[in-house]
Image 1: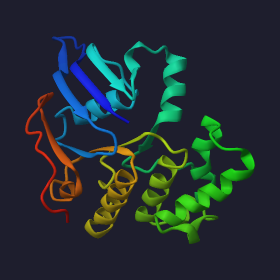
Image 2 (image 1 turned 30 degrees about the vertical axis):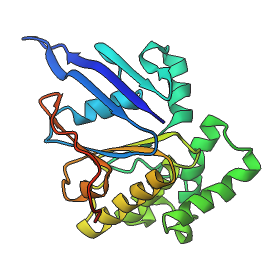
Image 3 (image 1 turned 90 degrees about the horizontal axis):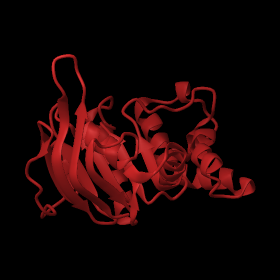
Image 4 (image 1 turned 45 degrees about the vertical axis):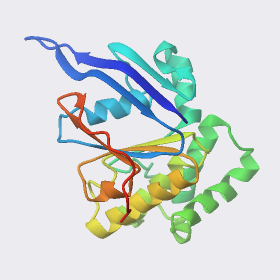
Length: 231
């Protein structure tokens, strides 16, 4: 999934004055790349992530993902595009509490209709195995640790073979050891060909990324190349 961003601006109105969250951003992310968006709270990295995922719309500029100008899509078409094209990982996991781990992973396949119903549980079990929690398949989220829940969330994000995965502070509620394992899972997704964009405060963990893109005051800072060595 190639992501092309040109002149991207997002402004939020306020009683005093319009507040720019993003200010004329240009960025291209090739298919199969793992990119870490790094910046302080309020820097604009989550807004940028939401633009890439089709969750929010720009005030100006364009976001093209896999050849689709997503700002031109209507609400229904955008929802369908997002359901088929993008996997989403949240900081607080967002697993449905009344569904088992396997059932949570099956949800994107149910919504997108990407697999015949008879194949979905088997695929969910395979995805859980890839992130090391296949033995938790029939447990409810409340019975899982935070790290296990995030692994299930990553399995869910990739269950329907999306072209890209976006993750917003996915390690914010995890200990450092578990956080490193989560980033290694994102690295594996990218190595398998999925474009992965992660917003994070963790500069040391971002070292496993192909690129670290700094976001400050709604603008991009350094956009360096691939690190010489990954941790």
